[in-house]
Image 1 (cartoon, rainbow, N blue to C red):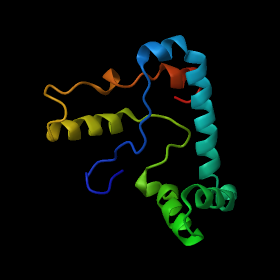
Image 2: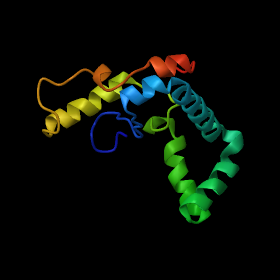
Image 3: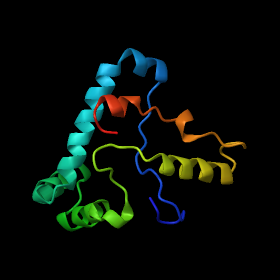
Image 4: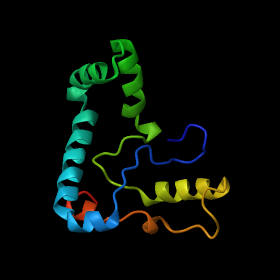
Length: 127
């Protein structure tokens, strides 16, 4: 999201307990692969009508509103939806900096790797 922050930030954050993730790596990798497939499907212009229909069903919004909402996601300049689930550590760092600016995190600010473990994305063939 880049609306008011002046930085591109992560739009969606998914978290899991590290100990649980380590003991369920196969589940995490399958979830990542499924999410990657969903992101690719949503981004594919050939699927736009089907994605709009699904958005209308899930949100109970009229077609015009679903199209407006999805147009924001589909516009690459907004940099909202990952191509397939990859994580940009620069976006994580920008979010950490914003949290530091507003006192949510104390200084010195931690590196993004404190919160992000890319090995599951690598195991899934995403990152």
